Length: 116
Image (cartoon, rainbow, N blue to C red; front, side, top):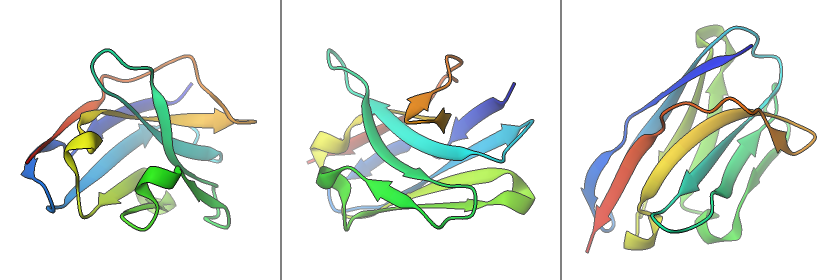
């Protein structure tokens, strides 16, 4: 079982940047993904990255602004978020993904708030 701790969220003005981190313990030889959930909305996929980094995917709304990466030596996955918009405001979660299905075990997430 993988335990995940998200960090790096905060309050930022529109157009600003944040870098989220996902510290993992346990097995890391799998795809990791970032998800987000805004108040009153369903959780949505943001980006994912395979173990080797050879496959990277983004949801259309963040493409060109967000960059997912990982450092396997540090057991850490990152989400660099640039040109942030108010609609990016949400709690951001990371999770392991197998066959496009995330693990049932979610962390607390990290809050990202973008003001206009």
